[in-house]
Length: 270
Image (cartoon, rainbow, N blue to C red; front, top):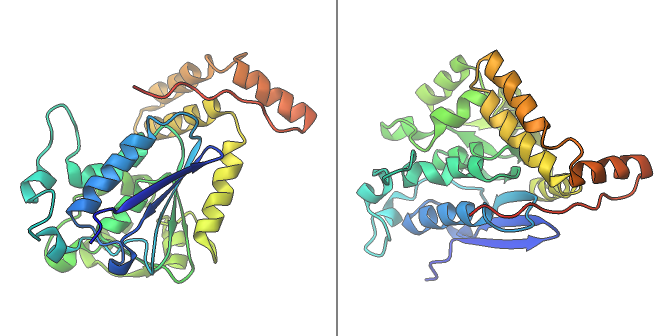
C-alpha cells in the first residue's frame, strides 16, 4: 500500500492540496499526520502561492482518527510522537496538522464534503474559510471516545463560534449538517460543489495584491486576540509598508483601468 497521503499541485498561484486516502474516508493515521504537517510547512515556503485549497479525495473530507491504522506496525509515529511537543514549538504533531494552516501566510480554503468528524473538523477549522456541501456532516466527536478535542480546537473554534456553542458541541459530540454549521459559524458558506467553489474563490484571491492579502490574514489572525489599542496599532503597522509599494500601485492601476493587476510575489519565507 502506498504511504502517500497528501498531494500538492500548484497552478496559477493556487496550491491545490488533497488528502488522498479516500478509501478510508481520509482517516488520520500516522502517515497522514506527518503528510499534512509537512504539506502546510512546505506550502508556507513555496514562491508564488497566493491561496490554498484543502480538500479530501473520496466520499469524505476526513472522518477523523483511524485508530486501528494509527497503531499499526508501519506507523511512522507512536502516541508519544503525536503528543510530545518538539523543543521550541508551541504545537505537537496532532495540533500542527490543524494550526499550521493558520501559519501559512496566504488564505487557506477548506472544501468540505461527506463526513468531517473529530480531527477532520479540527483540521478544517485551521483553514481561514470553510465551504461545505449541503449534505456534509460535522462533529466535535472526541467525547464519543471519552476524550477532549486536542488538535488545536482551543485556538481555532473560539474564533468562529460563541463559547456556549463550543461547549455544547464538545460536551455532546452531536453531528450537525452544513446548514446548521453555517448558522453556528463552523461553515462559511455552502455549495453543491465545494471544491469547485473553493478553487473559484482562490482564483479571485489570487488576482489581488499578494502583499495586501498576506497582511490582511496576519491582521485578522492576530488582532482577534488583542486589546483595542494593540489591534489599532497593528492596522497601522501593516498598512504603512503597503502604501505606495509596487504592488499597491499595481492594485490601484488595476482598479482604474479594470485590467488584471500585474503583481510581484514576495520572497518565500526561510
